[in-house]
Image (cartoon, rainbow over all chains, first blue to last red; front, side, top):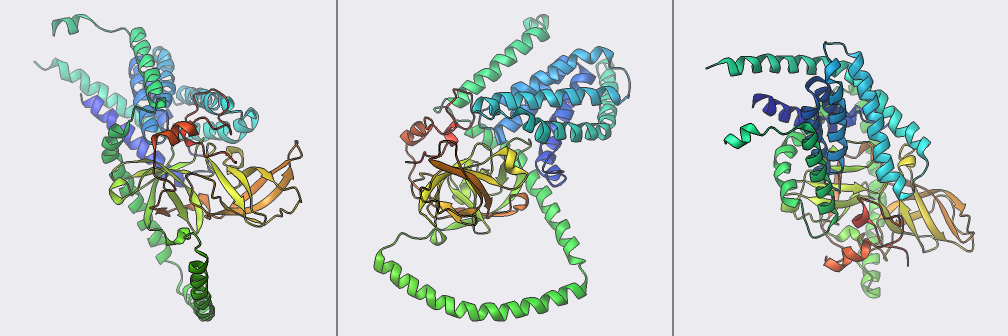
Length: 171
Length: 314
């Protein structure tokens, strides 16, 4: 229960921060994707199921406030969380390199999906320009931020797990 | 209870179920009859106070920073401004005389009212779209302040965008530089209509695109003013959009297109004014007509912006 509550707070916090503080920290009008970091980290640290739910709710928040099609971002983020959950098995320590690679891959997949489904189909065919100006800069910025944020998230996760183990032992 | 414990859902089944749920939601939100407004409202109560708070802190910090500006600079500025005040006062007297004349002539000619006469609500921008693909933002006034969907939003005397969603104390605004925004506009110098469309590729340069301008006599020049046109059914007439910075003839040799430098600095919008006047009272058939407009929704896509299409040029 506590885990769920903390996750909910974390998602809301990431969403609010991304809409306010990080907009002012944007470089060349590119904002890092905080919610993606959250989704990827929890998918990687906790497995498919949790990644899926974290992704779903992150996406749903974006849909509800900024999207005009509810469910679109929820679907994308959900699959990102789910796919990262496949790598749960190799997850073992605080090492930040693997999540950075995962975030890079996920962010590119996210960018390509959004472009493909919402821009290409509207006749904006200049893929490389979008890749160069939106997808890659966002990826770089997000990966850099992952390097900073992954460890706190890892510690939080460890703390939550340790406390959970204590929970059921109580009679 | 027992059943629930015995049956543990497999992840495989769970993801299939969730996918179906998402697809269902997409279909639901594309159908016009279903509204997610209640959900939006409830979430708004949770999120908006936080955003307001953070925003307040940000503003306070900016104020503090500004407060430390050196006295010298301020006094120099004061002197300069004093001069400007004198100048402007002189100008103002002549202008107010002109205004009186204008009013008289307006009533004489029965001209339409200017948008500057409509009632407006000031609002603060409290959050921006989380992604990098679109350009929408949240403001801290909503339906309880009389804001409704499709109201026009201005700042610095220029058009910013249009309200797309409202909650009790918040509203989302789609700016005209958004990739899915289309506004029908008029070039004032030659009174010809064109479409102003946002383009993500130009957003970095702070420009927007205009297309489908008829100009047989080659009269359009750089620096010409573009305002919203009277044929638009969502945007009020005569709001300044920006000035033409480039013009080129299209491949069909009939129409022209080019770029506009918008009157509003979209990188730094903090306060906006919402005009509390709808171009037309909302009817159900307006939206259904609009979703079929050709402009750039010609492809049968899950385009989230279909109901956002502005009217086509006549």
